[in-house]
Image 1: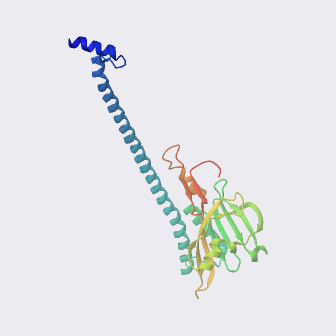
Image 2: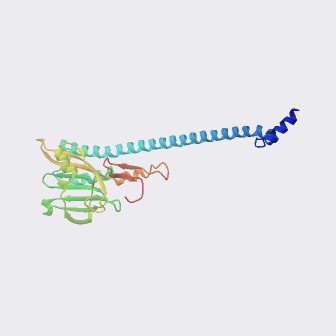
Image 3: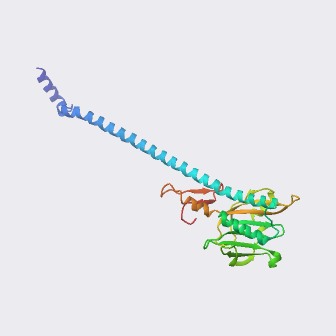
Length: 271
C-alpha cells in the first residue's frame, strides 16, 4: 500500500530528485574525501607560511650579520685615519718630528705610508708648502707629491714614483698648478680649528676616484695655526671590502650618503 502510494506520488511529481540516484557509497565517501582535501590544503598552507617565515627570518639574520660586519670594518677603517692624523699632529707638536727639514719629513711620511698601508698622508702649511705620500694605482708604488715654491719657483705640484728606498724615480704626471689650500682636509680643518672629516670629494687627477680625508690642524708654540695634517682614504677600498662579504651571489651591499650619493657597493658594475 505504502509502496504503491510512493510510486504513484513519484509519477505525479517527476521533477523531484530520486534518492536512489545517489548511491550510499558516494554519500559516505564524498564528505570524507572533502575533509581530506581540506586537511591537506590547510597543512600545505601552514607549511608554506612557516617556510616563508623561515626564509624571512634567515634573510633578516643574514642582513644583520652583514650590517654588523660592515659597521665594524668601517669603524676600524676610519679609526686608522683618525689615529694616524692625531699621531702625526702630536709628534709635530711635541717636537718628536720636525717639519723644518721637509726632505726628512717627506721620508718620514713615505716610511709611515709603507708601514701603515694607508691612503695618502697629506701635509700643508700656511707658507704654501705641500707634501703628500701614498699608493698610486699601478705597480703598488708609493707616490710622492710636493709643492715647494722656494725650490721649484712656482706653485705647481710635482709627483714622483719612488723605489723601495723612498727615492724619486720618475714623474707620474706632468707638473700642474694645484691649490691644496682649497682642499677640505686643509681649508675645512683650518676654518673649524679642530680635527674633522671632510665631505666626500673627487680627485682632481685621473682616475678621479671618490675620497674622504681626516684633517688635523697644526699649531705653533703660540697656539697659532700654521698648517694641517691629513689622512686620505679612497672609497674604492670600502667597495673592495664589500665584495668579500656578500652573503649570497644575488646579494648586493650598498653604502649611501643621506643625500643619496653612492659611497661604496659590492657590485662590479660601473655606476
